[in-house]
Length: 112
Length: 116
Image (tube, rainbow over all chains, first blue to last red; front, side, top):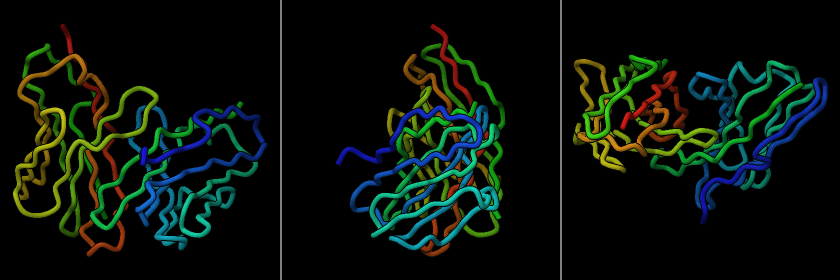
């Protein structure tokens, strides 16, 4: 297993467009997390899945954001009607019961 | 609720010198504590973690950290800096909630510069 994989690595989109990011976690990990990181800041928690169930969502996750994890495997994060303030690095992480989260390389979103 | 404060947004050391990156946390329950490193345009790599047991934790690349409950601190150290250690370092905390959720709360990060 090569770790957590995210696609795409970079995305440039026009304001108002929808974007979707994909995360493939480490295969034996049942927990999956999405974080957002802006310049000069630490990652901020967005949402958490245990298997296919979305168990927690941050208040940062407005109604324009939706995340899914069908069948408890890969996950997608969709942002509708993107705004310039959505420009950030979106990080996916997965963990097993030990709690050590392993991060992907991230998807850098630029909204122009 | 948890929070993390990293003292010093930028630390500069000479190659071969001691590295000390400071982290203080606040947690209403026993914490799990982590240090991550991030290279430019990359994701985060786990350096080390404290859960329970021994308070001095050794990690990868020669780093170690000591959990001090009385000081609510988890400072990261390395005896001798290498040029390859130049990166941004993040301290993070999660609640020891019996395994139900390991959501991490991160500090703002400390950028480490290593001078030749």
